[in-house]
Image (cartoon, rainbow, N blue to C red):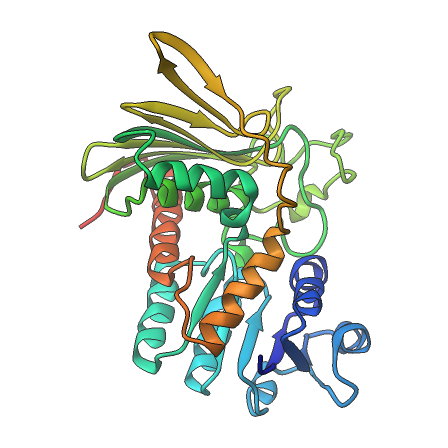
Length: 351
């Protein structure tokens, strides 16, 4: 298989924790250009993951002049659209980290440019590739749950506020746990239901804990002066076919149980949740029962690795993406509607 020449824009946490190790494990990419506002971060990434002659930049526009096949956009949310659009306009395919963009208008512009240029635009919703998500998606596609009419998208933590980077900066991120974690849970839920026709959204957001000290936070106390996003957000999403989704997201609720990005589905034939692995509940031979598949068998693959493989084949071979940019666009629109509803006190109706 031919190797793709890759450029990295943004060499901070998500690059080093997720994308760069997975790109290296994939083996079908050569990273020949790195860009970060802090040159030393780009240099460090180059020394660990780059080709010997890889270049380092502090301006992404200079990186885009390179002869590259793909560009990874791993920057704060506020620049996802700007960099992705510029990359596609310059002839590069794009892997953009989630969420797609800070606003719906920006995300819509990204989709429009992808259509016009014919470039691959992949969004980093790697939770779809988890073993529990893959199993549940197959069950949904096979009709085992029947008509799914109620769902929950869950991403809640007790006291686990990320205190590094720009997570607490509303201007750069657009929001807090909703746009950070809730976006994964909502993406999985809509994907499982295969339903992107939204009728209305009602939302509430809270910033109740931001000014506290001695917080008991998993990663140490946050700085109240820098905490400009919500600490929890909730949404009520009604679909055009009448199905209903409740979204719960928080970095810091005073509750015992914490849940990573999960989905809960209720259908006419069966239901499912992701507590304690994956549970599918149904009535069998007139008795209520719970199916718990063993997801450790078959050597399940790292979701980050699956994501890189799908992106590679989409670019190199024209294979179909799993995360369609049009789907990610709906996720961004719903998130924006929750924030808008919370700010205005009104339900937001979609066209």
